[in-house]
Length: 407
Image (cartoon, rainbow, N blue to C red; front, side):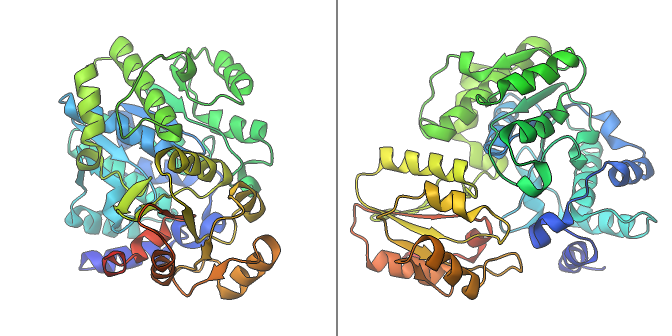
């Protein structure tokens, strides 16, 4: 490995990774990450953390917290997934991506280890070492999948948060909201406060928190109003949960922040964290929006936002991984809107044959396209200036969108 591109190729090809393989890459234990971090002299023991889990909203909550703390003058590490265009998006300090040289050096180091960690385990270990080397004051960590057995659960945070619970990754986490909530609640630590945005399974989560003597703070009791862009649906709930986390940090830690810094954090969230592809407007007249929503709960909330904001017709462009609950997703979609189905360039994507099966089963009048740009072109041709086009279902679609198509 001599170059960054060679290192990334090695990273993606040598070990199973969720972005490429989906649930087949999941490792349901902490043995590997523990072994890797031990070889690295346990960087996780030298840092302070906020740890965030949830089916939907955890990336947004992490980004709002990190952006605010950056505005407050704290050197803030941020670990999120997946990346959209560049692997280094996953690891940032005050908005700055990890340097390519650091990625190359770390891959060389891990390649020499006897244990064989997964793509996600390597990435998280890389983040921890980078945050230690750069002397971060605090690090905001997004759970990869679940919570209890996720590699990130090796850390001991000063604050945990659970955003929302929905039916996603049911093959791994369980088939009911209660089962999934218990997995997410695995991040709760003894005597560490919990900021809880979830509303449906609070009983299960609070029960686990009590066992661990964890003080629970509910976002539904956190009365706060917000300016745009976080003023509806899920964005509002995410902002409330993030604001609650920041208030707890203010009261129980040295990581002070003010109302003005919070508002500035919202305004500068993209600069401070690279936040995008969540209800992101790509074009106006007609409005083209990309949203990474990929389960029924998240998609419903995105549609609610758009219906409140836009008065014209909503055209839908959907692409998805094979393992998703397509029946639940199609039940969440409005029945009379134009729908375009698109594959993307990944072995996880629904292919043309599978898209045809889904069309025949759930939406006979859907149009199957060869790629997302063809779908955008067709939808633009069929749209009026006041209409809205929503592209959703997978972050993989985002990297394939051509700016030329949007002109």
